[in-house]
Image (tube, rainbow, N blue to C red; front, side, top):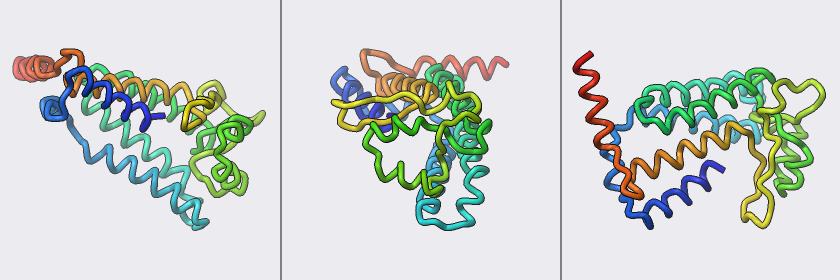
Length: 199
């Protein structure tokens, strides 16, 4: 959902007069931490799918650590208001993952309906360390991956309420950063700098 939303947002932003060159005006901080968080999560999945036991054992802690890194990077950019929307989504996902042993619970029937057969088989075999299935013991199930983006959407997927907010925050951040619809972030950065000097 996040990747698709970002791609669509970029296309719309370009149509609406946005430019990639304007992204430099945001003054985005801790970009490397974002990359580290996503790299960590990707590594967990790859090593887990390979069946490497140490990775599977450490996956719950590392999964939560990836979200902690992501939240820290978002907080570092809190002066940009779309970040608050994304941060709320991260907190929601973190809460349900932490409450369920370090894995995001997903509705089994919806994963099957989305056509993600390989992911379903890996999860059933205990080799998809970032996800588990919703059952009677699942905590905060209303925050889990229990909603389906179905066909005819070309990439059906199961998502959580937190995913929706994260995607919305990223989409708005892209619009703001690229200056789509005449929306510029330069003034907000200047105002923030002035406020910091006055403080």
